[in-house]
Length: 127
Image 1 (tube, one colour):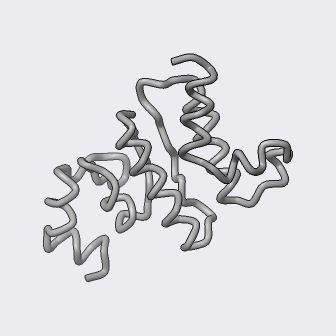
Image 2 (tube, rainbow, N blue to C red):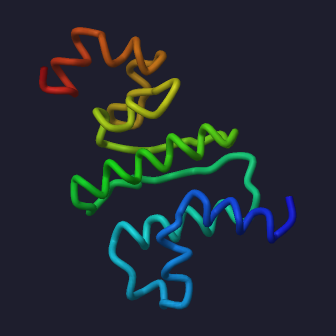
């Protein structure tokens, strides 16, 4: 894709950034800064997008919008690898997940498998 095509795609995903395109990134809200970081990564046309704790430090309502954006990015055909502690939200947007404890994979499976596994519900989802 050309630069103009990638920019149009990023603005379609992040209309708020189009509105604020003349504002310095450092003056954006926390959620907008997270969107800006993701948009910046998408502008490079990655084959794999890595997101490290995209919900860290954000208000709950902003967390929901960030994960909705991740879902839309996946729907656009990007492969996304997310490292995230908010398992409840991340399992809503991923197709597959790996649970780590002390740096080791202790469980893996589809999001549906993990979301419905009794031991996962008890240990990670508080159900």
